[in-house]
Length: 210
Image 1 (cartoon, rainbow, N blue to C red):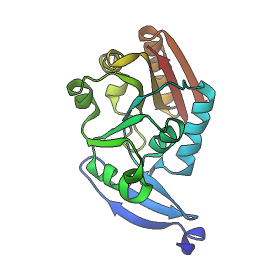
Image 2: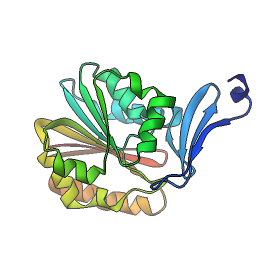
Image 3: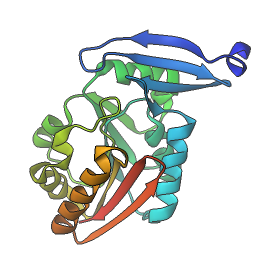
């Protein structure tokens, strides 16, 4: 809508079991997703991921990708552009997020994409497939679920990586997460053969190789 170039316009709003305030806002002709006031999808999030991808220099031979945490699907669109022939599975505990991704962010038209409503931990335990890449993009508003930093969860991710597999993790780098990200880094270095990190604004991305 033309008005969105002058005034951001809320085009969808809901409260769900998992997220108390979900909003899709049209701003300057594009949509962004706010969850509990925190940006989850849109141009800003796209910029963060693009910088991280360039920093890490991702491999080219990726055939299947698991994305834990769909939101509006910004990272899914970027991955599809990079790996157009790869099969991508997106998992989100909140069905409303998947519905929003389809309706407002074009996820319904991404070839080779499967979207699943499930808890990330449950999905990993019950779908023992080998993945070339696992993307962990799990947030509840401006918080990261504590299990993301648990060694048991990280070891499960490692177990289901292919021999050439890698994991990309979107973490935070503000307030208490500055300290927690350092602890997280040490855990990753303990569990994986290769660990890289990249900090931009209030986010810290990690790239690990099995």
